[in-house]
Image 1: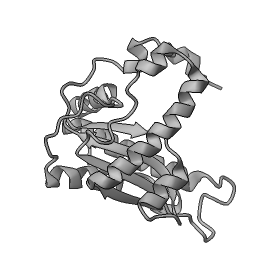
Image 2: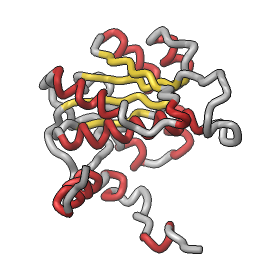
Image 3: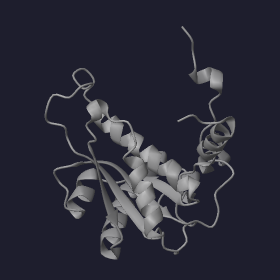
Image 4: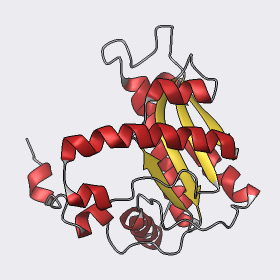
Length: 205
């Protein structure tokens, strides 16, 4: 299959428009089942080391489970507040766990056998799952569905809540339609960090 310049421009626009969506933006509107499946299927097209496909996805709609995960976040976020100790951090809404109609726990199934591509770099299995998450993020954005990645969580507690204690948590995602997509990343707008320039991160040998 060959793609056109127009296809490349559309992809670039989707990449540039991807946002980490947090609380205060999610709508209660349910995600259509066919669109949810499309987002999940997009993950399966991600590259994986040795074609191991070590990912697993737990779709969460249950309010009690969401409440449990939220309490996990709240506890961990109180610890983080002490680390950053700033009014800007206190003002940030860093999750949409209960607001978002769908939560997805993305898991890594530990690869126990010798796997092509993992004999030297043992983390390649986990990195493969991260690639799957990025696929989901871009597909969701192309469908005008917001996605947020919640990382302020105690991993063991999450796994216990969803009864997957033999797995590894790679990401916890919140999905839903949103009021708006910001023109640029929120933390960039708030000047939490400065955007790095192309020449700062690219070198040639």
